[in-house]
Image 1: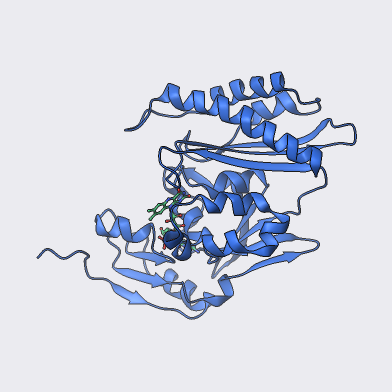
Image 2: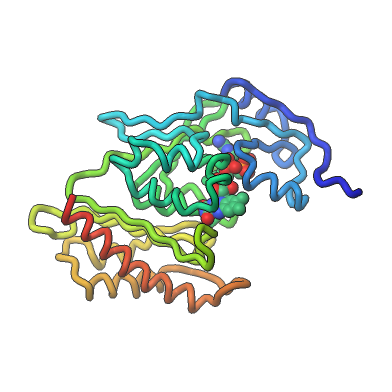
Length: 294
Ligand SMILES: Cc1cc2nc3c(=O)[nH]c(=O)nc-3n(C[C@H](O)[C@H](O)[C@H](O)COP(=O)(O)OP(=O)(O)OC[C@H]3O[C@@H](n4cnc5c(N)ncnc54)[C@H](O)[C@@H]3O)c2cc1C
């Protein structure tokens, strides 16, 4: 019988430093980090990736946490699983949009194994977490033997399955600032099957001032370009104004022009643009309602 998977050398470092030393020893292409394995193993079984060395970081407890700092906001270790984020009281209470997003990622089995760091590092333009992190103005902290650096979530994914991570770096932490008062955030993905990857997804954050004028807005789109993206021109339509249904419809129209989707096996480019138009209006309206109640 044909082997399901090829031979590789398997390392199980116990600390971040041990993992980084291993990573620095091998060339790009011959070595991969594995966390929950939910994306990587599929690629290995299909032999789209055939690393000679596999560095299993799942046991590094220093990368598995969810904590709230009064000054610095929410910090999520890269190894926090989707399920632990979905169930975390800190997140349910203060950042409920993250818990809502996690509930619709695949099945409980995948969410129990898959990590947020693995999802983000995989660089899939259709992944659910990154648009939400962009709307929340999140940052991603990476670490290597030469130090740490931080990148805005909107600059992290560069192209299809390509990210800002260097070969010798680990994604260590996701940082999200505290959510200001009078702010509403909402994420919705449209997929053909519930829990499946998004055909298109939209995350919107709206902050209102005391007169219910839009003080800040961030609109992020997923699955409609080579990487999750911000719809900055659509944001400009709403900023500094009293948001109405007509303005939201206009923002949706502009966002659908900013997106650059391609036709795939399931739907056409035009269909995805229409989805963006509808979702930005709908999700924007829900974010607005939340901001008014917050
Ligand atoms: C059936 C199924 C359905 C799914 N549906 C969805 C969905 O609807 N929405 C969605 O967003 N996702 C979906 N996913 C993807 C899932 O969320 C990811 O597979 C999972 O989060 C990846 O995490 P992991 O820990 O398993 O990563 P792994 O598979 O272990 O790694 C993925 C990639 O990230 C790298 N990596 C992992 N951790 C780090 C780190 N800390 N630093 C640097 N590099 C790292 C690995 O080298 C690899 O390249 C689905 C997956 C499956 C199997």
